[in-house]
Image (tube, rainbow, N blue to C red):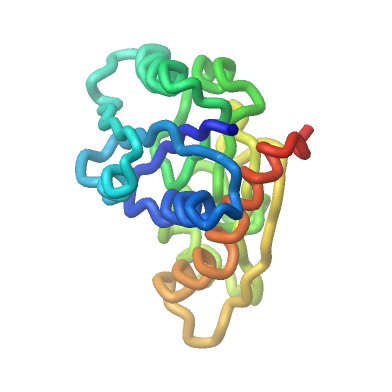
Amino acid sequence: MLKIGVLASGGGTNLQALIDAIESKSLAAEIAAVISGNPAAYALERAKRHDIMSYYVKKGSYTAQDDYDKALADIFNRHGVDLVVLAGFLPILGPAFIREFERRVINIHPSLIPAFCGKGYYGIKVHEAALASGVKVTGATVHFVDEGTDSGPIILQKAVEVKDGDTPESLQRRVMEEAEWILLPKAVGMFAEGLLK
């Protein structure tokens, strides 16, 4: 069975989507470990509630990016992780980590890449930018992670309508409900079935 390692910095709603898919038997996988660089991340609490091993790894404790990458990789390798999922993870992963898990790291981004992505586009900032631009459609993208920022090959995308009167918060919620929480378990399932080349 596919073993997943999840990296999350905040509330862990995408982690929860994976947990729900696994518990409902719609996703044949196991979450082996969850790591956060934020000790207050609710993602860590979600992991504990579902008896998933969880770890707090502070990036500031490491002077070099390679050392931080190695610390994360060592935890995942200890748990036999096959696929790493970035589920709202803010720190940038370095080349050493990407090479260690080459073509085995995926990310969920709250826009239709190549729109509103790259350096500085994360969390609510993505939705603020979408609203400021006046687009009528936004969405979410699952992609492989490479050494760039939001630049790896796209796996899945789903569009979400921008409605009159949307706030960044209401748009963020709709993108999560209508796109992110659907796409991420689907992409992991595709990986588990060997459908991603």
